[in-house]
Image 1 (cartoon, helix red, strand yellow):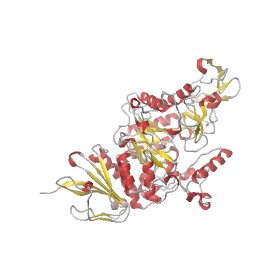
Image 2: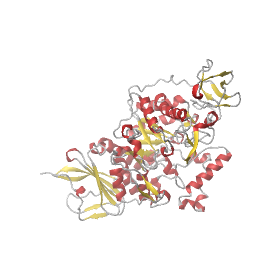
Image 3: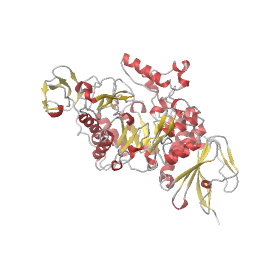
Image 4: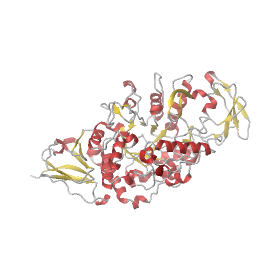
Length: 599
């Protein structure tokens, strides 16, 4: 235990005696408590005064204000010895919040759905944070015991069992971790060492973590070892690191690079997938250390989401103001990932982004929904409920067939009717502050700031808000058209050789009209695919001066897939003729393939 200002440190076992620990150099204490086995609950007592839970607790069965419990981390019988990790090619990510994914809200219940997700075409689950946090429900981003899987979803071995079961059906699991701040309730770190935090940086969510100041070596060790811990002891296949732009570090080796290195070492023979959320869009995170990077694999791409949301809803409020939802934005996103790579960004009144020329398309995680973006609205509604059905189907095709790594948010595959709202269970005063803060945050959207909408916002601290967000899996059948759309597109991405190659042979695109564009996926030996997207009304192409529309030599385009198939709720499709005037149906996406011309 690191407690550099303490004179004495004792382990206080519930129902037993206190055992003093020996002081070591650099502020550490250590010792052996023979009477403490699995299930023992304990606290640390500093200088014979107050006692606190273990900052590196492996389990908090009574919550953040209770004692820590000793856990046997070696007793679980793993069955995934043959699992080698997430393959680099053709990843499809599924963001999941354990508490609302099922009615029970447990790892055991979530594990029962894994075979179905695998059959749908999901091969990576991104689990929202599970580090112990206060209250009976929450998103998990206010965790305070970073080594303790929350008691709300089950025991630590229930989490191990979930990961083991996922591997058995061919799904990797990465964990969303929060290293940029800790929650405001129940955090014990400051009692042991105020040096865990610093006021030298301004953090959006509280005190910044001290990664580069006085006594930062011990702080860095705590967080870096946590990254390795989840991969080593729980067999996670990687991490998604939250809001990395708020992890301030001027050290010779940035703590993110140290985290990436430790995580990969913990994986041993297994491959490890590291994803970062980085609002300024610094592609340095994805470059290898030998090229001055931090060694991550992928970055979330908000640009794609923002363009899609503007195109589908017509709203350009708040941080959507710098997007028009026009065809060129989608062509550029498919070809180059980020849209902002150093241009002026009016919402922030400064330049945003960095060039992506040397970054592969798979390094960008694209999405139409994620937990933040669904919740950052008045009613937490899913995007399909806010847009024209045909346009939603068309951009779903762009997402799931494009060369970026696609991510779905839980229930998106069957057009879930459940909203996803912000919810957090805190004590009275903190609950009031959270409720006020959430309302202030949403005021950046002019439509939400109006009195009639602001007064109707869901209370984050009301359990009913949390309960409303739980999925209903019977909607897979009741929303069969949306479910078929996603399953068929994921099957096409997996089984079609050109789409499965993820643009390895090249991708290009062009604008065809005010609301229409084309993307061409080049295959081996001219076995190309053409994706035509029209978010407006029917478009007549009586002249075709765009080379991307030309079929390979001695072939003609034939229809491979259409978002307007009745199976998806569409109105049917008339395929473009091999010769003559093309009419692109409105609110639709078509995929064409070349067939040899009969001689």
